[in-house]
Length: 255
Length: 186
Image 1 (cartoon, each protein chain N blue to C red):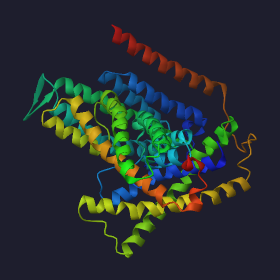
Image 2: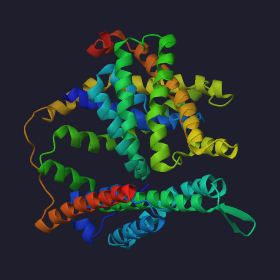
Image 3: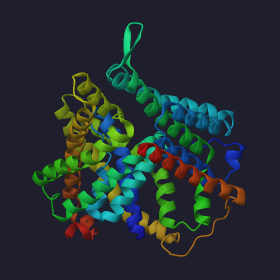
Image 4: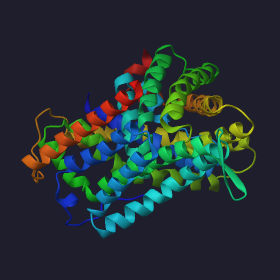
């Protein structure tokens, strides 16, 4: 959907933990807010965040966020606006549920804010810098391996799935027809993919072991991204903001 | 966690994320996004399966860009634990027991995902499930009933097929390969 977009913006230069903390804070605060105005203010904050990543990040993340959010808005409109509870507002030929539309605005805005916040983080956080930051802060090798290495394995596995599909079709496998017939084709396609991958496990373990991945020693980051006092302060402030948002939510619920 | 466990977890995550490509090619109305988690639970154990489920959820969000579904990560944890228990009971050894185990998993998974879907997202989540919810709502079902019915219907089908597929994989493993997974012998 959106990958890292190189740049020199403050978000690009920030420590990867700071950028991710901003996105995580947007996600957590989004679930704490319950009124349309509050949620759409958060959307505006997420948009400002995207803008601070530079023009290209703003364009890409807003476009991707709209692509992801529009189908959800459409479903919310039908489920809550058209099929929602009384009282209703007449808008030309259609009548919309007033409480339903308010709820749809909260739910739609929440998803838009979260998607926009994380897409901005993805667009401004270099995977290489993130791995270096994790290594520098002593995150065990296993965790960085799982997050970084799996992303490199996926294209290979996708290619293999495509090759198996083509090979089985050459052998006469039909992938059309009734749902049961299509379900029957699942085995000949999925089994070779999974069994082939399982057969390669030992080879991959040996290759990783040969590179010293099996040792428990703490690894040294070659280019650890610089962290700073103000950035740590920002991360603590975000944590406080999240706590305040939930405190406010529960206080309102009691009232 | 050993290096071998890590490689297997990576495999489980890749299966979770790539199997959808095959499902899409077959135009099946299911996701099968937990096949890798169930497989790793049977081959390695609950800890590795939970890791595979959580990493799948995170990387799925990274790839699709849609991070709002992260709260559903808890469903992957439940799937991992259930699948491990089912594997320990030997339910994946035969198709006749794997399918009922999958139906049970569908019930458990839907019982976790339906409240998240209803309370956190107001019933609007993945396209297919929400379409079923919308149709049921249009037919007059209350929103909570529509969301729960859609979740149960899709999860029962999805997990029954996922467990049948994992059972087929385990039964197709050559002896030499199966011997490398001590959890299978238990």
